Length: 410
Image (tube, rainbow, N blue to C red; front, side, top):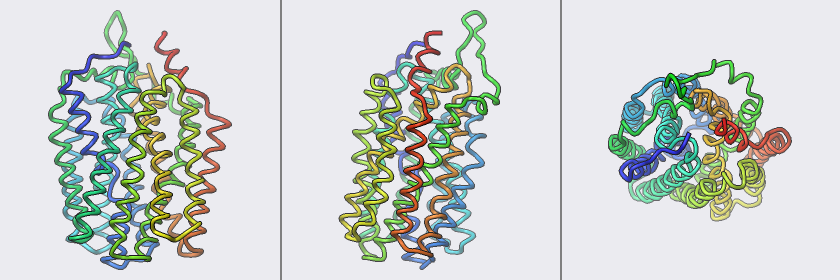
């Protein structure tokens, strides 16, 4: 159970992998909304529907992806194949305009990208071991947010001069960068027992893996899953809504300002990820998670106070606090609750499915409210859902740091 030594080469390769995969694993998101609105003049409900459809497609792969990563010793190859599929989908999108083809490219991209987060978590846990996993996860998220910030800066700059379609090619380049980065990670450095959260027997050397039924009997895991689903149901549609609002105010500046929103949030996420990596083992997980969840309803309310583009970008800074804390803590908490079961990756996939469902439904829900009642009603609806997530987390979720420590003692 001690932490595993990690070479400088593997450390830097993991850093680079998280940097290049940042733009790829998070998808086109608000850029797709701007592209469909500005170039093809789609209605908000149609934009929301195609984004929801892609999200739902990704849901069916989350648990199988986790099970695959629990079982396979070819974790690096899984990332390579998925990155290449995302590249093909991204560079194809500018050449299609029909709803069916746009939906198909986004479904393939979302399906492929669903393996990235659990694969990185598995490789990190397999290299560092559970004791050093919190610090490594904080570092992963730091480089992930730095990659998102750089990609958003490039996307905003290129889109201003060359149009919104350049974003798709940028994603393809980032995907190729991730393929090169993962190839430099040493396969021999990954302990595949530790990578799935298993504890090999000291006498036989074989691992113990609990039955999948443990996912349904782990009450804290279920509560955390519900909190995650509500958080993403409230969060996922906020930036796309802001981007559509910006497009109506100033079409030419919509993509650059959306990039500014993303860059602002990502720059704040970097210190948040560092904070989690350095303090989550000292302060515990729950105080940090509560702070992240509290930011979301506040953000939803602040969006309705002004239509000024620079106000909207400023409010987006708060996303860096909430999402930054949540993103860094998510794999750590799942590791805490599943350590010793041998089901870390499939549990990660199961919870990703649950909160992915919330994220997938979010644009569709927001699009319907927007079309019926306007932007303010849409933002307030999302804020109310976020408040419910915070209340559930506060009242029902235990501190998980002790779970991990108890397992380590055993």
